[in-house]
Length: 312
Image (cartoon, rainbow, N blue to C red):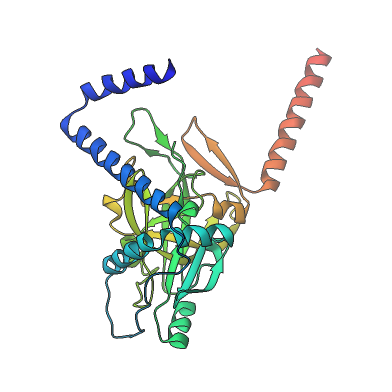
């Protein structure tokens, strides 16, 4: 009965859909069928060898961000089964491959190779290494700063102020807070304009999907800094996803003013207390000591009120 009701509901929704919505649904169905077919092939694939040759390292070789991402897409398709197996058995959040062999890996994106480390591998091997990120790490669960209004009526997205910095530059942003995401996603062009990052010839671009839409990004290690209400500053070096073509990416679908989507990883490391004030649509960043002091003051206030009532 539940399935019959679901089918009738879908039919009713389709009858009311416009042409653009129907085209989008059709494209999503085709994509889903292709992915299912690919997974079926992977399940039956007994190959245990990596397919693809690392290009020779050449400092004068200029490859754009998009060209690198396109090459990576083909490599991931050719080696999807191999990659899934390696990510699972190691287990790993990222892999570095040279001549079909894994020469480095990491369990989290926190230790994703920095540009200078990738450069060292290039000079040692004479080749550009392939870097692959486990897409499960990039998954986003959908569901004092003023919150961001979204495309939905009477809806606001909690925000948090952060500073992103590197040796070359820094940028202060008001990012949307999303505890359903592990890493932080930021507008690539914005970071380049602020001199926080630059694209190096030997770096690898990556591809992933969010809200059933593909996007390209550059994994880059930066320092994320937060300031508590007390004035205390906490910072942590971590790997973020610098997303290309941000304004056409799935990350602005719900909020076209968004510059960054700040995930839970940085807060798990910095360990602040976040107070979400839904009445005033504000986020307060506090320390545990400040929370404890507030609780103690509240307890004392209640006890005084109780004593006052008794004396009456």
